[in-house]
Amino acid sequence: MPLLRLKATRSIQIMDDFISKFDPTEQVDVEWFQHMVKVAEDIAKYNFITEANKNPMGAILEDGSMLTWPQIHSVLGLKYAKAVLNKTAWIPA
Image (cartoon, rainbow, N blue to C red; front, side, top):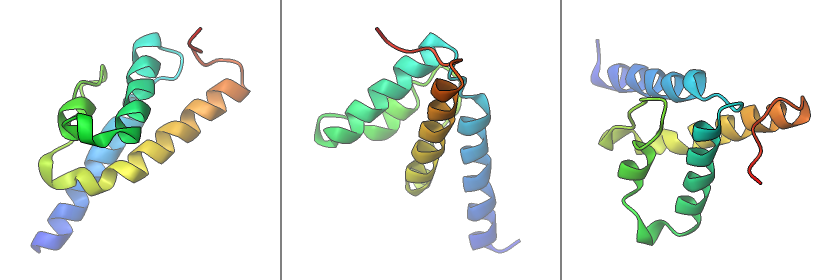
């Protein structure tokens, strides 16, 4: 399998791992997502991959896969928004 295809396949696996395991009804998942929004707002203060990997879902963002984060973050945001609209999300006080 060509290296580019292998990297693309791994990126999809990483994305799927984050997206499928994120549960917007779980306080720990939402608090981690909220923290990641703060990390993105002030990236210079953090090691981004270390913070992403502190997730409660056990998903791992590898060094070479950081470019997948914008897609992961966007889909997690949409998943959370859907849960908010359906009144099933855990919402911080």
